[in-house]
Amino acid sequence: MGPLDRITQEPGIMGGKACLRGIRVTVGMVVSQIGAGRSVNDLLADYPCIEREDVMQALRYAAWRAEEREVLLAKA
Image (tube, rainbow, N blue to C red):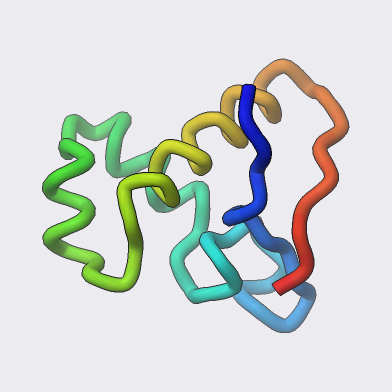
């Protein structure tokens, strides 16, 4: 598994939720959209501020969290 350098967590951004690159797009939103049947291309079209690797890292981060592993995140 590659690094999660695009996932950040800051108390002042989205209430401290895990976000993509310090912007107001949460990992939870990305994962819920994919789970609802949206494609990666749909997300990229709807959120031009994110990139394909952001989505991939959000999914990897969610998988790690589901396994209840400790993951260190980058600062925004």
